[in-house]
Image: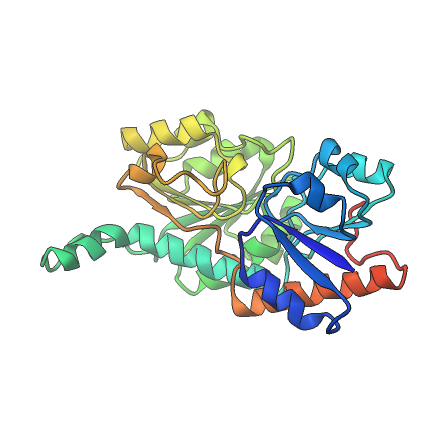
Length: 315
């Protein structure tokens, strides 16, 4: 079996998968982007990582399974896959992946509130007792999207004594009780939720209806001095809108683990702003999360070997 990783990002995935496959029976290939069409023509399983698998690339290969390393499959043309009888599967966002992302989101929230980059710079400059941080206790945190990650984060945030509100497209009463929220709003009422939120955390899947979800209107609805945290997908946020909000000071800070183009260019103007904290798409990259993902991916490769459809199939 020839298994192709599209891109050399997330390097730990390669060795973890290799450990779980029968020795000598499979070949794991990593394509850094050059000659991708040629690589696709000679593989059985494609793991797209951050690569967009559109109809043209689907046409270039004879592979039988597109298996995402994680839950996001917005970059895979599902209709093109179905037309070619190619199975597409992902890994559920629950379990250790959701817990890992929740822990990282908590890290980003606290780093913003305590102005971690400035604090680190002050150590180098010999400045004691600055900057003046803000406490998390008593703040209103809005979970924009109520899925597995938001559930894991809500459980952790309650310990800090925050006021939790949520925005969802689903049953409001049930979600409010399940997540133990102080209040819950429908997507059409998001302005009411955002207007009372000190910190907004995006936990939404990216799709045609959610691309650019956090636009100028959403940012303006948030109180002056609010914070935005995103470890979901960069495309959820309107780039120009968040840049303006950060430069004007209406948005006091943003913590981003995902970006509009990945990897983000080191010279990107957003990264030069003092009120932006950025991490390289590592929210879900932990030992336990990756172990579970590797197990799930290896399991589906074995199912393909036996002629069985993959688990957690999307197409």
